[in-house]
Structure formats: C-alpha cells, structure tokens
Length: 159
Image (spheres, rainbow, N blue to C red):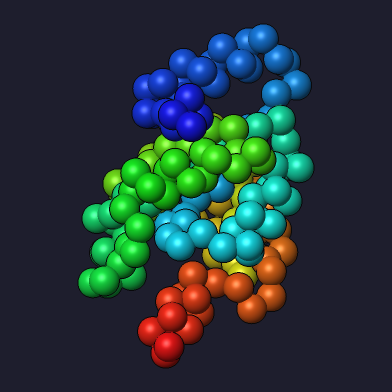
C-alpha cells in the first residue's frame, strides 16, 4: 500500500509530472479525519473519485484530531488510517497534514476540485476561497444516511 502514501514534497513532484504528461488531468482533493472507516467513507470516496482523473485524500494527523475532536480520539493511529485509505481502489494518493485546516496543502498542490461531504454547504467548506481564487472548483458529494464515525463510536460505547 505504501506506493500511494506520499509526503508533500513527493506529491508536488508526482503531480507536476502527471500534469505535464496529461494536459486534461484533474486532481480531486478531499480531507478529513477518517477515523474508524465505514461504508459511508467508501461511498463518499468513490463518488469524489468520479469527479476527476485522480483522488488525493489528505488525513488529519493524530495531534490535529485531538485538537478538533478532544481526548480519546483518534481511535486509529495515523499510520493505520493512511494504510487503510491507500487500500481503497478509488484512492490514488494519500497524505497527512498537521495543521488545523488543509489550506496550506491546498495552496501547495492546487487541486482542480476540492470535495467535501453533503453535510457541508459550499460556503462552509474550508479552503473554498483559496481554491476558487486560483481557478479551482468546490463540490459537495452526498453522504450515506445514518453513517458517521461519531455514531459508530457511540453505538460501540453503548454495548
């Protein structure tokens, strides 16, 4: 699975080469915690992948998840989450980020399409202004009803 997991520097070089070789190349970018992967994640990622030539998933590192979600999270360590995502056929590239938002990564990689789940409004998508400023597009993709990591954790704790 390692060939899909890349550092920022590796991604810059890979994407620069791919854009040079493929003039119509369109990178789809999504980001999130992806803690305790479930069918909703898989369906979301497949839908996102259909929007372009390749899908890059940027994953919050463990420290940024703790800042966002509080103690007790993440459930799965970053290395496991990266490897699990790399195992999905619909995912072409996986990387991690330590910042609270993906904006620095978006500005570095300049994906043609930024995708978030349908639980976001376009106005609520972090990075929208930056992506649209360089000519990229922002889209939302429908989520699977009743599927979320938080609801999964809550159900597990009840049992």
